Image 1 (cartoon, rainbow, N blue to C red):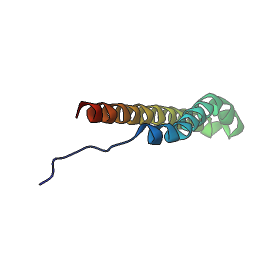
Image 2 (spheres, rainbow, N blue to C red; image 1 turned 90 degrees about the horizontal axis):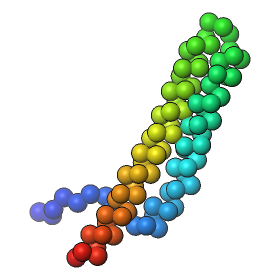
Image 3 (cartoon, helix red, strand yellow; image 1 turned 60 degrees about the vertical axis):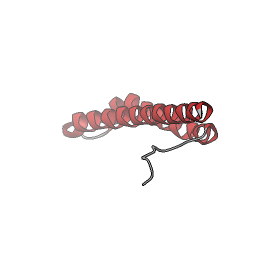
Image 4 (tube, rainbow, N blue to C red; image 1 turned 90 degrees about the vertical axis):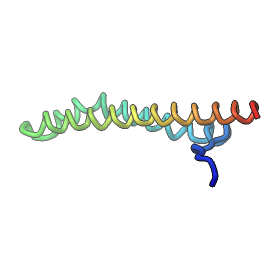
Length: 86
């Protein structure tokens, strides 16, 4: 039986993912900051609903992109540290 090992990631794979994650953060911020203006465009009874959901989507997109970037950075750095230790 093999020991359980987590996902491995090289620095190269991590660096390749950075543009996608930064794009996710930027899109999330665009959604968040433009939610108020988009809320003004829709009919008055939908304004609050659209604005809150656009802000929520923006925060989730930016937050999850940062979280995934952080986790992947941790995996990439600890994997190399473990290889050096062996």
